[in-house]
Structure formats: structure tokens, C-alpha cells
Amino acid sequence: MLVDEIGVSVKAGDGGNGAVSWARWPARGPDGGSGGRGGDVWVRTSSDLTLLNQFVHKPRVAAAGGKRGERNQRSGKSGADLELVMPMGTVITDLNTGQAWELNQAAKRIKLCQGGVGGKGNYALRSPILTTPKKAQSGELGEERQLKLVLKLLADFGLIGLPNAGKSSLLNELTAAKAQVAPYPFTTLEPNLGVLDGRVIADIPGLIEGAHQGKGLGIKFLKHIEKVGLLLHCMAIDAEDLAKDYRIVREELGQYNLKLLEKPEIILLTKIDLADAKTLQTKLAQAKKLNRRVYAVSIYDPEKIEALQQILKQT
Image 1 (cartoon, rainbow, N blue to C red):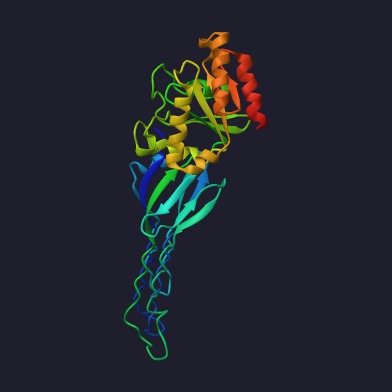
Image 2 (image 1 turned 30 degrees about the vertical axis):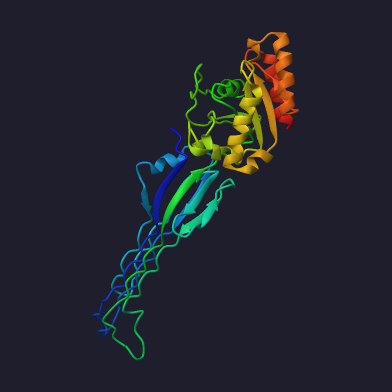
């Protein structure tokens, strides 16, 4: 299962405490070392979209703390940094401060939490006034954040439409994807991805009226359309009312985010193998009233699929 939204607590390592120690030779005096620094928490991007799954059973992660200082002025060992790897397209939000980071670049690396500074030992605390300090400093606490992680797919093309409009089947034909298909709504329970000539096509689970309010599969998947460059609006030729179906999907996009309505869009009239020539021409005319860019396709017509592939490669 693709986890695309989850909460996680991250904490940098605490600084180690300073030591109180006394030299035995050649003269008695403070020689306690300072504590080691706590490890930082970093995040790095990856193309693996399943990486948020790691937090399902591990909702709290922490870097190592610094070690306590030792005698003979020896500092404690610093704690190891923790590097978290998350999918490109993840939006990280600090729930307490509102600060946010977008992982929108390959191999991007950012620091989320700063490790605590180690406390000074009594050797470092000595001064002309206080020559024999009998106390040491405690290490500082490492920074901690309560985060919300939301994955928004960074695809070039997004297949959208009502349930059972043929999106997954079309994705399988256009790319080497192996999305599950069946002749009933909501077969697709999570986004499927395919790659065409180095460009990513995302099959977004079917929208229904009220999706922006959480109905059906709801807003869980609407967020994945925000980063898509071109919308491929699939409409089955056997639909009773193309204009109504088109309006439902467009209204749901606009209710969720008006900017989605500004994205370039192509209508794909799917399942044309189910219609005769006269019905096809009638439906094409109806679709072109909704959007001038309309292409008729069938997964059983290799020439139509190849033509669509060329269109997408040139877009």
C-alpha cells in the first residue's frame, strides 16, 4: 500500500554532559572533559515513492545523543547524524511552527533538527577566579519536531476522470505499468505510475461528486493532481451524458483548488471499440464542445495508442 500522508516525530540527539574529574598527577586539578555533540536529523530525497511506509510502524525517530565527557580532558564522542530518505514530492510541515519544506529536487538534502551542544566539563569551566570548578554543564537538548508528511506526485501527466473511465487500462497500454483493472468502480485504490519515454504518467483514482469533501476516495488523491503538468481527462464513450460527467470532475477540481482548472487539459474519449462510427462522431462532437483538444482511443487499437504516445512525447 502506498502511504502518502503520515505524521512522525523527529528528534536530534541531546548533547552529552560534561564531566567532573580531578587530575591525580602531577598536581590535583580539574580535568573533566566536555560532552559530545548530539547528532543532527537530515532528510534526503529519493525517487522511491513507497518510502513514507517506513513511518507506519516507526512514528518516532531520533538521532544519537552525544557521550559524556571523560577524565583527562577527553571529550565525549559526538552522536551520529540520522538521515531520513523520503520520496521526491513530499511536503514536510512542522505542526507547531508551520514551517514547511518541499522535496522537489532530486538528491536534495536539508537539515530538519539541530543536535544539542555538549556540556562543558570542569576543565573547560576553570578560570582565574574559579580555579577548581566542582560542577560541569549538562548537554543541551536536541531539537524536536512534530511533522506531517504529505506526498504529492511529481508526474508529467495525470489521468483523471470518473470511476471506470478506463484510466488504468490506458496507463497499462501507454507504459509498462501493471495496474490492476476490473469492470467496476474504485478498482484503483492508490495512484499508479507508468513511464513513457522518461516522462511519468500518474493514474489518479476515480473522482466522484463530493470528492473534495471526502466522498468516495475523496481528497486523499486530489492532492496528487496539484503537481501534474498536463491533465488527461478520460471519458468513456458509453457514458450517458458526457457534459455532466465532465462538469462533475471539473467542479471537484475547482472546489479543491481553483488553480487546477488552469492546468492544460486533453480529453481522451476512451473505449471507442464499444461504439459504431455514427456514435463515435456524435460523441466526438459533444466532447469538442467541452474542450477543443479531444483524442479518441481504445486499448484494443494499437494505432490509436501509438498516436497518443507520440502526442504525449511531443507535449
